[in-house]
Image (cartoon, one colour):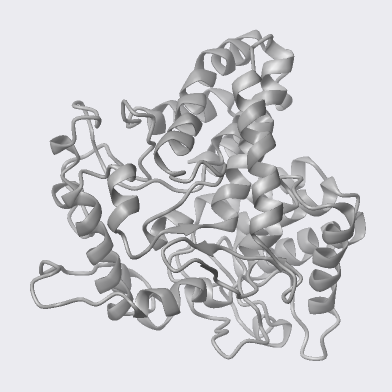
Length: 402
């Protein structure tokens, strides 16, 4: 919804506003923003639907609408900032932004209160879906350590692999783990403080925290423009940026990596979430240069890659067709572009943009794309869902800012 709102803001700002307002109708009293709001009770052909999540049994959840019980990377702060910057002379937009600001502030406060047990300034996730990168290889070894005994998960029926090529979707084994972790969350009424003590999946993720930090920056910028006190956000962000840069940097990889809190170790794999730290302004210029150089090395490879694949193409797990194990994702490339541009790496940023625009021009508005030039140039469509909204939103924003 955040990226959709950004797309609408370029030609119908009232629709962009409604998109955000509709999403935040599902915000819980404690500030948590669910990743799905079920505006219809009829959810045939979708799992997990509202009857599975049982949000109305949770005291903090809204009564007027049913929701999921997990959240996803908090992009809404910088999306709100982008809408304001596109319509700085529109008083109605300014009034909306000022009125909406406290909702995003409440969401961020939730992360620091409920998802940061060690008060480090880094929020944890307890489900792969909350990362925004469902079946990333990042989670493979961790989920293998989660034992599932008979009776641990209820019977369920998948529908996602009926609507897209099953070979491109997460496996049934992956889904069993997803359901197990949802059951754990449901058992504890999605209370982050309790979940932190029990969940075998407890990760300080790169993308998630980079988005929180960048959205904190946005709240500070909005506050400066509209006369809102931002002292609380500034304190959060000062700690978060330092913790991210110190704790999540892995020198041997020359990049950032998520941290597994339960096993007290980095998940030391190279993947796209690390590079969104550029957009959040986290790395020093020297570290930023290392990240940029890696991105450029992908373009120069003999086999030829469009930038940027979602996972390390040198790793044995890399799969350029399968969801988060290798393909190019529109919203991720938008984030990488913004980060490169922020650090002044204009040429590399434009390469990311042009590669993505070429894919959409040749293969359509699909959910994700094959990063191999030799393969993608022979295809007539992308992967996953067609007519995909965030693909359209990214294209609109790239066109408008080119």
